Image 1 (cartoon, rainbow, N blue to C red):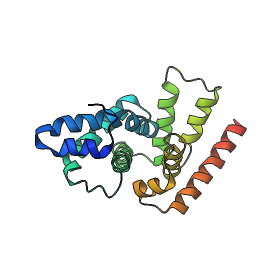
Image 2 (cartoon, rainbow, N blue to C red):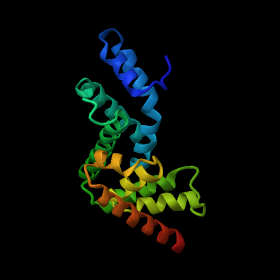
Image 3 (tube, rainbow, N blue to C red):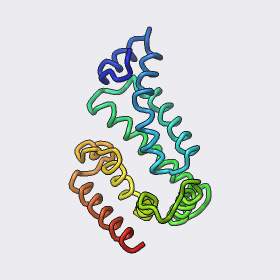
Amino acid sequence: MSIQQDDKTLLAIYRDPATREKGFTYIIQKYQERLYWHIRRLVLDHDDANDVLQNVFVKVWKNLEGFREDAQLYTWLYKIATNECLTFLEKQKKNNAVSLSDVETGLSNTLKADAQFDPNKLEWKLQKAILGLPEKQRIVFNLRYYDEMPYEEMSRVLDTSEGALKASYHHAVKKIEEFIRNS
């Protein structure tokens, strides 16, 4: 069985009590890397990303039986992952009793601590620019730019209108362009 099977096949394997764990394993194998990088771009730290990803799959395991297939499995998984990231960042803020700008500074410091960090390389300037965005714009930019998620799907993940998402992405791109031009 290939993990490249379509989601309906994977869900059918999962829903059969005799192959439930195998089906769940296939779903994890198919989506874990994409979800990891989505999470990593939001929380930055590898260990934190792994922790959040683990929480995502625990939630998926607990709720997959009730998944009604109103949306694509991919969309549903990204929604859980995005919400887990937001919860993680919110907890960081509360645990440290710090403002959002302090959390963003912490994320920036995590980025700079990476052994590969070179502030003169365009890819690092881009990462620093993305970190400077407000949380919502950062999420929208990451979903659109890195995950190439269509606005329609993003609307389901973030429970926001397509128009608002397009505006957020446009503002994010303008801020990033300005940051890179001026740095």
